[in-house]
Image (tube, rainbow, N blue to C red):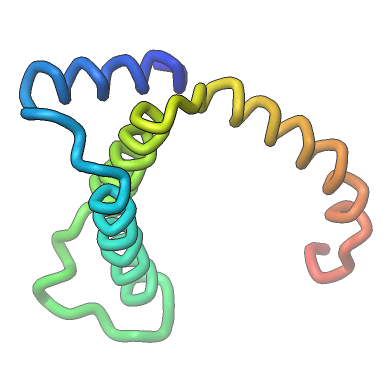
Length: 108
């Protein structure tokens, strides 16, 4: 599934299972909450904090998918073609960052 199809799938899900999109501010708060859940898993699983027993069964993929779902909602409700925006951003980053990363001694 590409990003365009993911946006369509989310829109269909909202129409078929939700009542409507939450407003943009509510979705932004929801996104912040979901990113926090991802951060908690990564900090405890890959960082220096110990993982609590209640966190051991948390699925990082599921939490990342929650973040993606809310990002797709925000894109839909603000009229953003995320497929085009992502392709444009990738082209910019490729042009801007390729040599910079190749020359970064910290990455060697």
